[in-house]
Image (cartoon, rainbow, N blue to C red; front, side, top):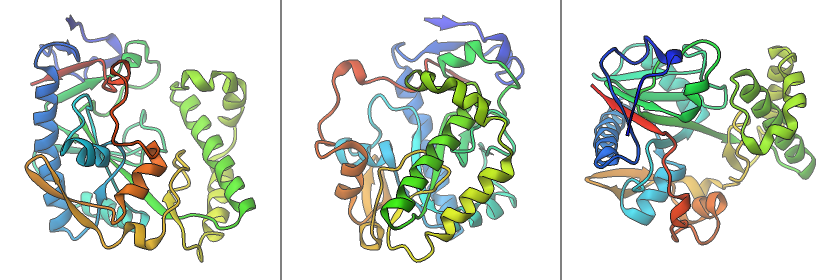
Length: 289
């Protein structure tokens, strides 16, 4: 099945590119070839600039369960500390490897604040079904993505953790409402999300700063507070020293205790694949030039 480029993406996807369904024969093989090529370039770039990173989320799961990309996955997830991410931002400003772009919520008006950075593979196009009904400005890029998430010390104490969890959720709602991407499971909160859009950025920034201050002496690491996922609660020894895991024909860093990391994200049976009906890529269509 092929699809015409939706009007909302005119100018983002060049004229003449045909989008093909993720279910088309050979589509995922092309996606995986591009992702592995991009991942090799990104890992070499980060290593060359001494920026520590590790496999995260579904990509770490793929390394442990499949020895590489999950067969139905269509992006790559990496993580690093918040300090390393600041170094990455400075490094990217000096230049990128060939055939890669870099998007953040600053240079791409469609990228929510809880997705801090994405390396995009030039000449590839990954289109979620939602783009066919998109309102607002077009994205900076739709290239297949190598997503970079951040971790930092998270607040200690039950009350501070509850406040942090509430902050994560309200920030997430505000960003999804702003970008017209509210998930079906959160539609009951649509009115609340709409109200959060009117809250000034300075209010969220001040709350974030107070929570980070409360985390300064914490011994626990988790996803950064402007990201909605609160499952991770890791100790230094769960992350470091990093270990090298085979990933296709690459050898890439992973957390020291990947069992604990993945159990917190996916449950103790993380090595068991999901039911066939749940084996779906994030994107509905792909294109290549």
